[in-house]
View (cartoon, rainbow, N blue to C red):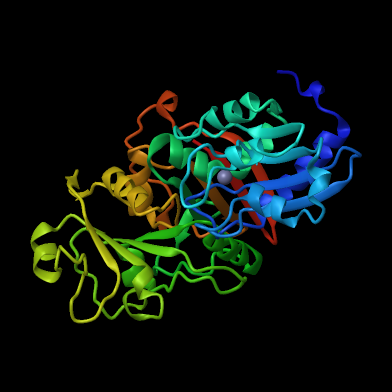
Length: 376
Ligand SMILES: [Zn+2]
């Protein structure tokens, strides 16, 4: 359907709805970000809202609640960034709610791929005699909800890999030092990402070498879950991720069934009955390491819709070899090391035509560093 069906005002109001949706970022997952704007028959905005918190009211309901004079709904147009839901979940169906109102038209940016919705929301509205148009700013809406859409379609979280390397491709110096490759602005940006994704994942070597906290510090935001890949289940329980105030948000991935059974009460899924309040997930062994594909499926069941991986070269290799990375965020610092740990090694590629091909590339200057963002 051509976008020209839509007027300039349609575009203006849908942009507003997208900006509203964005305000829920970091708080609604695994639900989608949704924004909604209501315009009366005269073309004046009479209501707006967005999905603010997981399990709380949907955008349409918040927008309707904000309308002071309900008579303004007569002949109104509702702009919503995602197809109104058809199913009754934690809240009543928005499509049914809207269908009982005297609104004239509903404009939708994106149809909901969730099989419980998928066109059914639109059908409910149309049966009630409401005019429905879809596809306005659908690219923007798709990109805004890339984690949710991926999670819904694949049953696996959206996986973003962040790496920071020198111009000559090293992520650590020969002495192992790695923490300050990029500048302050790049590091702040990473903290913003930690707040917007559901979880942060690192491998056991990173925990051993850096004892990171993986918390959101340089910016305001909620603390993500921390996923630690510890195949042998042998990391010291004194590390920050197991002992600080967010330890209940730590999830350990292991394939060591013996140690898992010894150290955990599998019924309670507690890693260490003496103290640790996080969770541990037992997965199969794959090529000598924990099966990360299985781990992601298990994480999806725990409502983890997105993962920001901050890997060393081992974890990066394991993920890339299995095609488990959806997006790469690669910082390139204007430094040369001439030796140390390489960012990408051992991908099992022999020929140029086997190279992992990235697409939709954007480059941004972040302070003195260059950020390359791309999708697999
Ligand atoms: Zn809804």
